[in-house]
Amino acid sequence: MIPFVDLWRQHAPLARDIHAWLEEALRQSAFILGRQVALFEQEFAGYCGARFGVGVANGTDALTLALRGLGVGPGDCVLTVPNSFIATAEAVTNCGATPAFVEVDPVTYTMDPAQLERYLRLSCRRNAKGELIDIRTGGRLRAVIPVHLYGHPADMDATCELARGEGLVVIEDAAQAHGALYKGRRVGSLGDCACFSFYPAKNLGAMGDAGMVVTGDEKLYRRLTLLRDHGKAAKYEHAVVGCNSRLDELQAGVLRFKLSRLDAWNAARRERAADYARLLPAAFLDLPETAEGCEPVYHLYVVRVANREALTDSLSRQGIGWGIHYPVALHLTTAYSHLGYRRGEFPIAEQYADEIVSLPMFAELTTDEVAEVASAVLAHLGIPHLAVAEVGARL
Ligand SMILES: Cc1ncc(COP(=O)(O)O)c(C=O)c1O
Image (cartoon, rainbow, N blue to C red):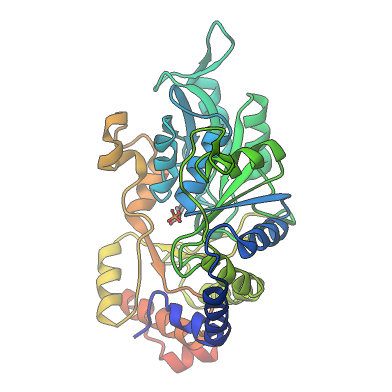
């Protein structure tokens, strides 16, 4: 059996440190917005190359609060991609705005700047006040959210240039890309702000839900510290209507241990991705590719195959874990049917939703296990079967 992900393998070597920290936290009994949260905010923002970090309850809240903090709300429209986890669009809806979608690049699966340029030119107009109006939704276009999907950075230079040329803010959805590099810079330092999830299975994961917004914008930072904590400027002094979305002290302490290991874990993921690339038959499967200047962190290792169900059935029979991220493009989900999109509007995202399969990928996965997965795929494809040992010998 090869699991899709095995979190115990990550936690076993950390168990003593984590136990010691939990005991210490119990002794201190200061669980909300304490020293560990402040330190983790500084350390993680610094790691990303950003000045400020605001810890929040989860990645969805990070996106929602970032939008609210930047003044996006009812009557506004926000552009993102159709092939993300639903949280990306949900955050837009949660802040009162409406999402609209831009097609993705066929190689990187991330927002295609050429399609963004086309959208801005053909699907928007200026009103009498000079505001940019999204023709489909009638909303004022305010922001763009590129998603660094599966750990591969979106083309941020071109995206930011186009967005800023129209006065739009850029929010990175970096929930799947902790530590990924774009032209030598870490994701999180590329847009006006970036939003991270520390959901347990992420490259940097908590022991529960957690998230963070990182930014270089001091005004946004100050506003976010209010918004996440009931708008609190001082005790019982509420400057704005906020919410309760605080990162808790226990999670922050655990995340600090893990942050020191993130680069090593990401390096291991890259090595396993290289193993897959050597062993899987590129003539029969579409394998992940890397855009020039990018160093992805392989949150997921996603291949594409025409007859997906046959492959996933076969993997299940052979005891190999797998996933689909995500089976329905956002514009076609029931939750967003009210937006009126039709099948065929985003051919790449739609085709990929039907063909993608995520193979086992986590930092502790071994080369032998990758060889076993590859062998199972070869067996399914009916390619002259290579014994696991032979596949391993090719590594
Ligand atoms: C791309 C993307 N955005 C946002 C989120 C939301 O994060 P969370 O689950 O912490 O709310 C996720 C989490 O799965 C994600 O993958």
